Image (cartoon, rainbow, N blue to C red):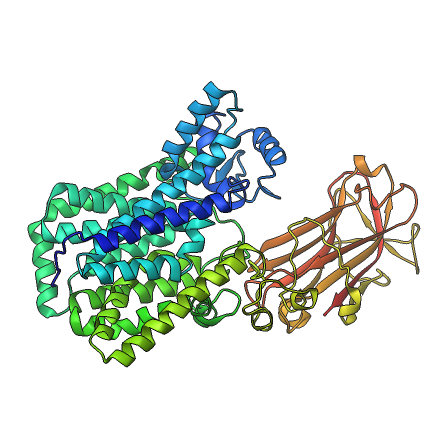
Length: 616
């Protein structure tokens, strides 16, 4: 494989500096607010749990709950999974905590000596994480330039930096969301490619160790980045001779191959030790939300690439040139072609197989594809080379289109930052209604996907926008079920009600697959029931429960307790209880809603007329 050694000319160096300075500038124009929240809260929790609260197992989460309440870090503690034996296991792997540990220690020392709260979440810790993100961004841009100069001249390298940083969602994920894992992994990919190049040139221990460590840290930050091992495996294999050369290279450097593997394992060892320490198992699957997961038999390729919600080529169209560039890459550098093609196809398949394919959160475009830009910059560069050899009119046309797409990306990033491009609810109709606009109307916003509040209890407020139908009524008249107790004495309506007690705590359940509830993306469900508590409700807990199930596992679980003040339940009489529920973004159309009443206390409770309505 032919690699050109280029001198470090000034154009790409100046562009690199200006791009880094621009990202830092925008970070100050749009300063971070409560960074250590939501997913980042889960990335980060390892550090304060270990070094401040000395409770890595989270055996007593009172301090966690106190921090959540004080700093509004999350609406629910979804960032960890409760263990049956007690304690919790972190949901996210610890890569981000490891990468940001220097910033944490600096912030902790500063807090101790400056009078700020040394609780892990006060202002010094928040800004330390933000500054750490900027440092990794700068390293990533510098290293990307070093990689590109191995293949292209200074002018093309500068152009590629300009297109990647300002023409894609890289800008949004560094200038605005640089504290997420994708920014860090991008930088690790520049190191992976750099050490791959250097090791194939000279089989030295420091290159082998750097390659293995970079890959291990990337996987530690995002386990799906295991795909990065394809880079050194297929590097330089562009023909049968290339394949034979790679086999001979491995055979003659088996010790260094062992070092690459060993250093990658070394980077991941803290995670294995943590799982063993917390759960008793060397490997532990901590993603306990049945509503999301990998489905490799039904990848969402079309949605990932072309959806107006988060479609990659819709919001990052300049990367279409990188895909076209595979033709030029094949013609000019077959030793890179096969590796990049295999990596891109496999990575796209993995990204598309995640059932929450829009990668919930406030991102712009497809953030999960960001790390692939390090490799896609190469076919993009070869495409620019090919265009430079074309007639002047073609060159002007292509560069004009690329420039317009870059400006479009910057403008739409501004729209995203100012809430015009919605962070989770985009539709085709809304996209075109607000295209090129600096503001949006209430009429425009009605074109968005339904607003899904993070509150535990939801309320259908625009009932007139839906068509209502009755789905089920459980009146317990002539009910034939040996698992329940029919009561004839305490009745709300008719001749019978249902008696729940310690031995029979569950009512019959209403169940219906999502495909029968609606053909749209969502519907509302309303459950009503008449409840007759025998004792004070605070002393005898009971709940109306609505949840979805995927292969028997519950997700989007909602429970309304009879002790809620809004119900004003009085013992010794019938009380009406109502609960609204917005269907989730289901993992499968076959997933089933389940609605039932559950007695958690020991004293009896009577219920009658359990009704379920669908608003579609």
